[in-house]
Image (cartoon, rainbow, N blue to C red; front, side, top):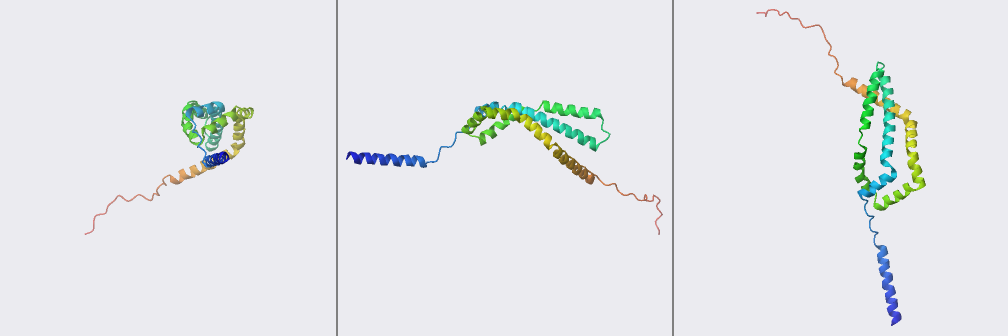
Length: 188
């Protein structure tokens, strides 16, 4: 009887453990705002974003200057300096912190707490730290490598815009001889 009882207990235990193993895994717990902020801090997102924006701003400034000079040979250095100051001013006021706040729900939607924790472990590692250190240079060099292609695309876009503007301008009406002002008396 004792063997029977042990056998039954073993079978019940086996059945229960098999049933537990077949249940779907509990969904990963969602990441919190604090989890994402820790990830941003570990990845140095704020600093990276500022560096990338500075790099992009410089590239755009260079491309725009070149395009303006090609399109308008009469543009003066003074006008270019004014353009540069406007561009720099707009970048200085760029709301990086507000943009990061906007990104938090997106990260929370796509990354669970275990995902975020694993990313924090990676970016805290020597390899992750190297990637973070090298990323600004990689981004800048990548932008420089793509500069020619981007400039050609910008030139093509400007040409299309110029054609469109010319096509949409009203065409001057053809003028013929002015109508005569003399009226002949009506015939009776």
